[in-house]
Image (cartoon, rainbow, N blue to C red; front, side, top):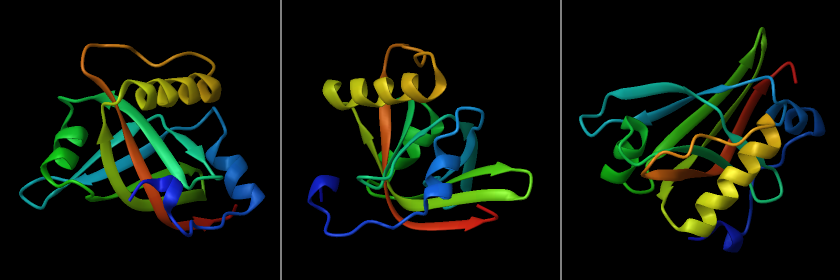
Length: 138
């Protein structure tokens, strides 16, 4: 279901939202390989509290993208940590190739990190429809 038509999204506090949008931090994205084992990679990402959507820029040939292409709508976690403060976003991930949505992911990335993401051939955006938010000390 497209995120814009979702009836509910997780509520986050202002402090969690601020932490998730702080340009100084990256996160660990965990996806599930086709054999059921976990793959975790450090990523830059963006968070949109209004829609409950997190976005990760990558290329279609990356392990994280291939994992999600092998199991559309697969579960993912995105965990941002700074010392003993952390937030984990859980949800379903989708690899998106639609140019307008990839451009929106790149725009948001540049807004958060003050420079645009790399633009290699095969660039895609992983959109994560977040349905659970866990946190500590935020």
